Amino acid sequence: MKIVVIGGSGLIGSNVVSRLQRKGHDVFAASPKTGVNALTGEGLADVLAGAQIVVDVANAPNFEDHAVLEFFQTAGRNLLAAEANAGVRHHIALSVVGADRLPQSGYLRAKLAQEALIKTAAIPYTILRSCQFFEFAGSIAQSATNGRTIRLPIALMQPVASDDVSALLARIAGVAPLNLTVEIGGPELIGMDDFVRRFLQSQSDQRQVIGDPQAQYFGTALDNGSLTPGRNPHTGAITFDAWLNRALAAA
Image 1: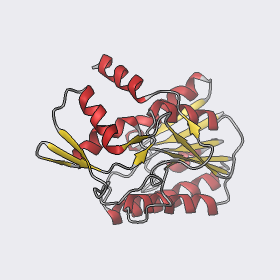
Image 2: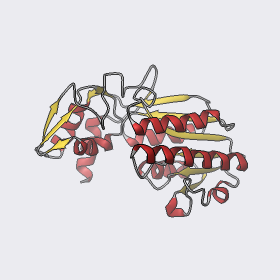
Image 3: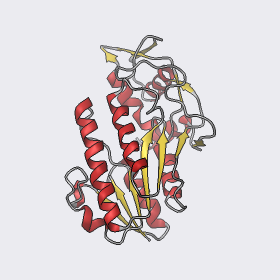
């Protein structure tokens, strides 16, 4: 079976490609590096010829509100049109838990617009909304750093290992389209401040993390339901402590 992974050279995409190849599929890692650009449409028709499944995990290069919306809408339209012409039978897309609950976030508004395009297209689909990856802890810390202090929300989140997300995407590619949205989170609920604090401690980073109920996450106020999945989500197997230990060992 031919499967095209859009964004196939990134953190999630490269993992999904490897997993699908090990299952014996004919997999193409599509990205600007391999001559495929969903934003411009370059290379889409050629790479999708004969493809049965597309896994879209591409991300915007610019998170500014207008730019990120333009990316997901334009790339989404180009990709879905090319898939329709090629006869693709299953469109799988990665989105974000909370995309429909945080309209103040330009990025999440853009992901919601991408989801709407998928749902109104004629191609059978499955959307996987993921909680924040463990790998995002460092960037969350950096975004809230002021000198040696990091001020973050105390709202609960359910972060997940990117490896667990990749594994689920690969499994979804092996079953019939669900024509609905499913979610995945990690095995542990944790306050955002504690999530970053534990990460920094594992790195011997001496910055002080302050939990502040009024602090915002990339300009957005949070509560305990903002970044946590709804009922019956998929749950990753890798704990945050296990991921930290693995990352420390690799370093």
